[in-house]
Structure formats: C-alpha cells, structure tokens
Amino acid sequence: MAARKAAVLGSPIAHSLSPALHRAAYARLGLDGWSYQAIECDEAGLPGWLAGCGPQWAGLSLTMPLKRTVLPLLDRADPVAAATGGANTVVFRDGARLGYNTDVAGLVAALAGAGLDRAPAGALVLGGGATACSALAALAELGLRQVAVAVRDPARAAGLLAAASRLAMSVELCPFGKETGAELLISTVPAGAANPYAERLRGIAHPPRIVVDVVYHPWPTPLATAASQAGSVAVSGFELLLQQAARQVELMTGRTPPVQAMRDAGLAELARRAG
Image 1 (spheres, one colour):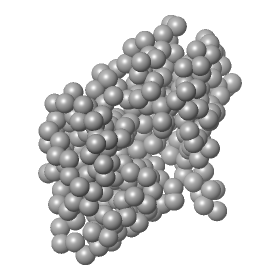
Image 2 (image 1 turned 120 degrees about the vertical axis):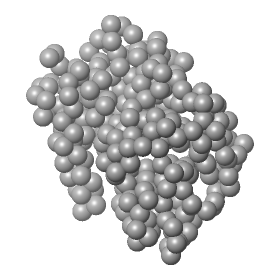
Image 3 (image 1 turned 135 degrees about the vertical axis):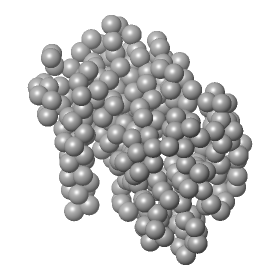
C-alpha cells in the first residue's frame, strides 16, 4: 500500500495518545511510510487544514474542539455522526471528505469488554458535550431509550437535547450531583469535575455495576478509585480511546486493526509519561 499521511487535530493536542496507537497499528500492519502526527489546530484553523490535505492524506482524527465544527465542512457524514452532531474522524476518499463518529462504536466495545452488551437498567451520563452525545448514541445502540444526564449548566445542553431527539431518546436533565442509582454511570467531564460523584460512591449501598470515566491520564481517577472500592467495574477512558482508534485505523487503511498491538503501545506510552 502506498505511503499515506494521517494526523490528529485539536487544541490542546500535545497530550494526545493517538499517535502512539496509530503508529503501532501501521507498524504491525506493515504500512511502511505511513505517518501519523499530532497537530495543534483550533476551530478557526480547521477549514484551512482540510483544504490543504492533498491526495497523500488518508484521514484525520479530530478531538476538542473540532468534532462539531467539522460537520459543515464535510461532503458526507455517516448516520452516527449526523445523529450525534459530531464527527471525530475524516476519511479522504476519491476527492471527498467523509465524516464518521467512531466514539460510539468505541464506547459500545468498551462496555462489552466490561461485560455489558445489552441495555442497562438505567444510565446516568455526566456532562453535555460532544462525548456525552456519543454516549447517548451508544446507549441507544444497546437498546436504552431513557437516560438521565447531569449537567452543570442546562442552558448549554441544546446540542445534547437535539442529538437525543435525532436518536429518538428521552433525556432527563438533572442537576450535577444527582444520586447514582443507575446500573451504568458514564462520566464525560474533564479530570476532577466528577469528584463529587466519587464522594457519593464511597459507602453507597447499591453502586452502579459499571462506571466509565473518559479521563485516562492520570489513572485511576478519584471516580475510578471510588467505583472500584464500592464494587463497581471501573472502565478507563483509555479503553474507549483504544477502541475508537481501532475503528479509525480500519476506516483509513481498509485493514483489520491490530487492537492488542495498539493497546500495548498505548499502555507503554502512558507508563512512560507516568515514569
């Protein structure tokens, strides 16, 4: 396969683990000459970056704050990206920009790895941003139609509510700090923001069966520690990142992603940073 270029764009981006994951995949797949880099890019810079991607480019991974910004810049978006209102992946094919949301498939795979492959008996999502919209879509894929979402500012939840409507889901917006009586808790908020829920999990009589924290460094987070101590299965954001990156590799290369090689490389990079 001819050498191609790919990258992850976002701001800030220096912390991204995506280069370690994608480069490991290219190495295992024997894609000599393929490159993957992290590029600092804000919303204002995205149109120019896309315009400058010539035929040597295979695709782009997108992180904050670009997942929603990219939609009007695409030639076509897959149904999941359209429903969630955000794309984290751009694939260049036959001169067209194709947008995908692999966060949803990544979360479904991460939950399956934690033993959940059906609709949970209730779910509470923390946060109302693009990742929370992907969490709604993943829960819809598992068959859940009603979800509680804890937000700090309901006035900023318009995008989330619009995504819920497109997904035919019923969302109960509740104050941040709501009791965690659901089987599944998914935190999509930044590091430290979920600490009030870590306090609630300590000594709780009926903790969630599974707690997902999209933060992966440093790990474990206070929420994950409290979840494990309460008897819940704690799922790291690393597993979500890994699974969505594997789907990106598949979309960009057309090859089966080497998930274990990617996991090993990502964990080694996290260990290096912690060292």
